[in-house]
Amino acid sequence: MTEEPYRWVEAIANRREYIEHQLAGGSPIVALNYADGILLLTVSRERQKLFEIYDRIAMGAIGHPGDIERLRMAAIEVTSSEGFTRSAADVSLRRLANYSLSPALKAAFEQVYGAPYLARLLFAELGRGKAPNLFVRLEFDGSIHTNGGALGRTFEEFGVISGTAASTEKMERFLQTQEIGAGTLQPSVRVALDAWLVGHLTLSGETGDGLPTAEQLKTHRVAQLANAALEVAVLERNSVLPMTWRSIPELDIRPLLENDLSL
Image (tube, rainbow, N blue to C red; front, side):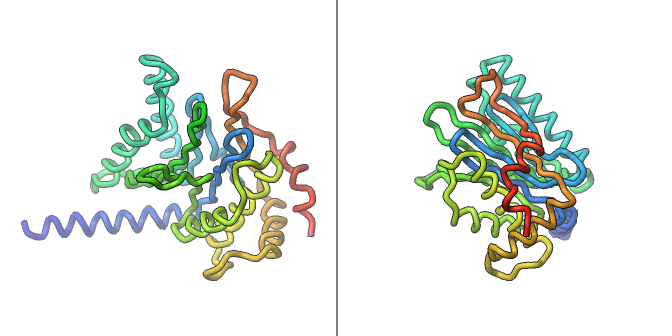
């Protein structure tokens, strides 16, 4: 009997190691504030990774496609039910993360005889009125990381996820050196793409402790975008449509990077 707690802790540690290994190759996702709202960007070779959830809420995810779809549908169901039974103004990302998705992820992770979720999620919520935009990272074990606002901490202008903690941390370090929030779409796409490149270079082990140089970023940008697709979406604060979500075709994004895609 005395060995049971140890066996559970050991099983949890093994499960964490397994999931981290499965997620290690996940392509980074970047979300950041820009002049008209929130920009979301990733580079993909196979499948969609950015999704609309509800009204002012969007999601990006890396991991197993089946688990991502289950969590996406759960998020849509929770927010739609909340909006229907109360009102759209009552739907919030904090409620979705804290009271619905986080407990579900934690329960699945700690039930060692069941399958965990192989997914890491990034949510973005467009603030109402003068409220700041919110970015939330949800881990496979249910832990939540936000872009600030609690206990006097100022809000950061971005949120990111990647396959490893080192890659995520380096992307955050890079974005902390950039001017974010007031730029139009074109410069914001460039900043977001450079942040993605920083994360991807870190995943491939091509950087040391420091950030990549501008030349390294340009070389990697040309190489990656020659064989992969840009996936870009925005949550627009002053949208003329009832919805704030807008997916931007790659054909409209490539011209914004024309000078960056030639060596």
